[in-house]
Length: 226
Image (cartoon, one colour):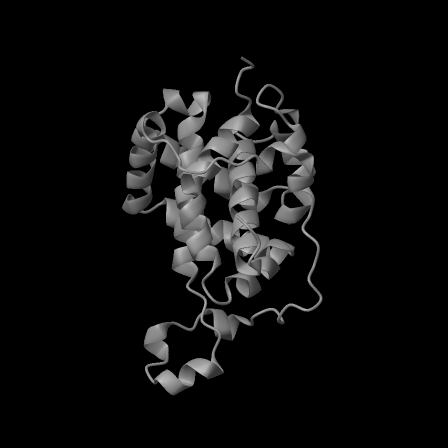
């Protein structure tokens, strides 16, 4: 039997988290909000900031603890092979028929801001917390699979992730979709492209997890099989 590669571990984490990513991706307007964030430097930096805040919370620490236990005991009902193919890591084509990108005014609207049912038709509501929660769950699931993470306690891993996000905000990965092929080609044994970071393996893993989670969220929003 061939050893499981880092991409095999990524696929295992995706199989574990598939249902949650699917649910979040099917929330109305998720695609319209998420796609522009990934396709620009400003949007990608905003995503880093939102996720940095998310992983600082006690709830995320619990995710890391639960993910470590789940990786040893759970068996997913569905197994895929998406991330094992190079085509998965190509920048998704733009849909010219998709709705216009949401403005900041619309993305900040919550259900509490529009109590009247009739007003819902006037706003596109994006439940960003649900999207960030699904991404965070997947990040935790993937890290729980990696041998390098086994040497870290959940609280240590949480702190390392916070540092990784701060470095990404200052580094070269300013537009996530541009880095798909690079992430795919950098294996667990060669982190030269990420050597400027404090933990190259963690930055590579984090980018791979973000790419995969966002790709699945967008696929769920199109109605394609996920």
